[in-house]
Image 1: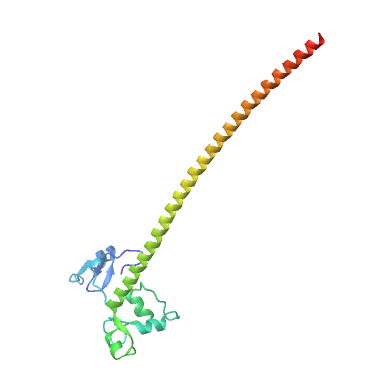
Image 2 (image 1 turned 90 degrees about the vertical axis):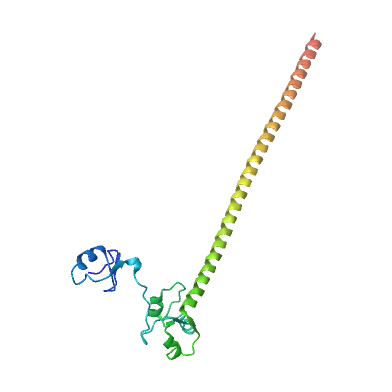
Length: 201
C-alpha cells in the first residue's frame, strides 16, 4: 500500500521508487524480500529529471518560439511559476536537445532551461521589488494621512476652545453692560420719583 492523500509520505524507497507513509514502511518493507531495499527520508528523495517523450532524453532546453505561439490560446496557460512537469504536460515549450537540433523545434529560438528559470526568477524578484515599493508608498501615504488627521483634530479642538473662550468673554461683557444699564435705569427712576414727590409738596 503506497502513501495515500490522507497519509503523509515520510519515507522514500530507492529500489521501488515510491513514497511511503510510516504504516506502509513498517508493514510492507520488513520481510526478506525488502531487506536490501534502501529507504531514505522523503526529503532525501533523488531529484527526478523529466524525460522527453519522443527521444527519451533529459529535458534541458526551453523553446521561446512555442512560448509565444501558445500564449493566450486554449492549448497553454502561460504561468511564470510553473513546475517542469506542468510545462512538459501542457505544451512543447520544455524540450530535449534532440528536439531542438533535429525534431519539431529545429531552428526555433531556444535557451537552456536553467537560463530560462533564472530569467523568470529575476522577473519575479523585480515584480516583488515593485510590489514592495508600492506597499511602502501606500504605507507612507497612510502615515501622512493619519498625521494630517491628527493635526486637523488638534486644530479643530483648538478652534473649539477659542470659540468657547470668545463666547464666554462676550457673555461676560454683555452681562456687565446690562448690569451698568440696569443700575443707570434704577437711579434715573429714583430721581424721577423724588422729583414727583417734591412737585406734589
